[in-house]
Amino acid sequence: MPYSTKQHQAVLRCLEARGENACTAAELAEDLRRAGCPVGLATIYRQLEKLEASGAVHKVNTEEGALYQFCGHQSQGHRDCFLLKCQRCGRIRHVDCVQLQGLYDHLEREHHFRIDPRGTLFSGVCDACAGEEADHGAQ
Amino acid sequence: MPYSTKQHQAVLRCLEARGENACTAAELAEDLRRAGCPVGLATIYRQLEKLEASGAVHKVNTEEGALYQFCGHQSQGHRDCFLLKCQRCGRIRHVDCVQLQGLYDHLEREHHFRIDPRGTLFSGVCDACAGEEADHGAQ
DNA sequence: CCCGAAACTGAAAATGATTATCGTTTTCAT
DNA sequence: ATGAAAACGATAATCATTTTCAGTTTCGGG
Image (cartoon, rainbow over all chains, first blue to last red; front, top):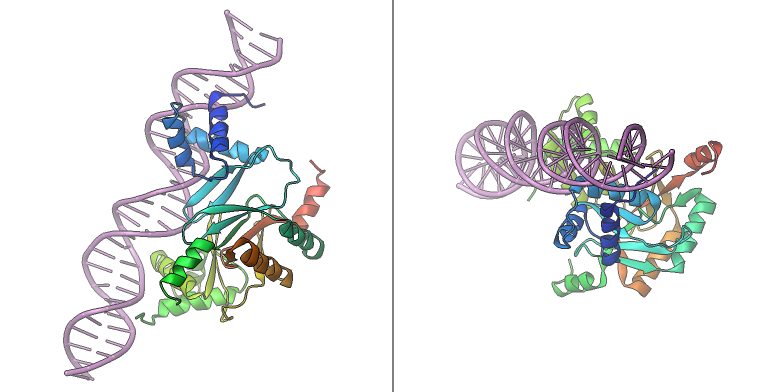
């Protein structure tokens, strides 16, 4: 059975503080070091693995490596929040929307596939970046 | 302007032959070697980059690296095909479903985010694996 | 047909994120 | 207080992907 360590708490606290602002393992290490509680990278990865398994954090795979973010004490059933990552600016947005639940239900009923909202990352272009694109002239 | 090379054609042909069966760059290299047309890994990556940019192939980021697959000569507007990856068996399924188009339209209209179906990978559990799980006893 | 610049190739080295190793330290039930 | 289980962290190892660089190929003029 797992032991409670100060590193575990520090990592969790740090992720919690970041809220929806997803970060990499390295950024987390930087945060912790600055907070006066340096934690080895290996340990951070180990903690992130556990936290993901426990459902406390989301892990999303991106081109440049994995991003992690606190997903709260929210219950298992929370299935109407999803992540949108802009291909241009790289920012990740959260959207809570019942419309999504409808799609998931449909997929489960009609296509026999149960979606795991954690781990699912929508890729696209956000408002701001779409605007910039238009400014420079459509291609 | 780009030159037409036999490596370029070989990579494209190989991806086309695989159809919906996505593969890694290394698997592609293996395929090509076996087909009697070995191509260096660096070149494969370079070709994949171009093919992705041109819209001829999808690239999806997974835990174990990127997967590529031919997405055909189909027009730009094709937005109702999406990819489901099973967390258990790793297989990637394609689903064509108008329900999805509805969600994308909603996201664009209400949440100002334009989804790029290429690059978006749904994570979940497929029918077969869900069944196996049940067999072993629910947890 | 021939030339040269631009584009492409592939072997090898570099990069960078993640994982494994391993000796040391911490936790906690007894 | 003890010791076995679990965790730590520095370092080395992996492994996918990129970069480098010295040749090779392509193709539009001449």
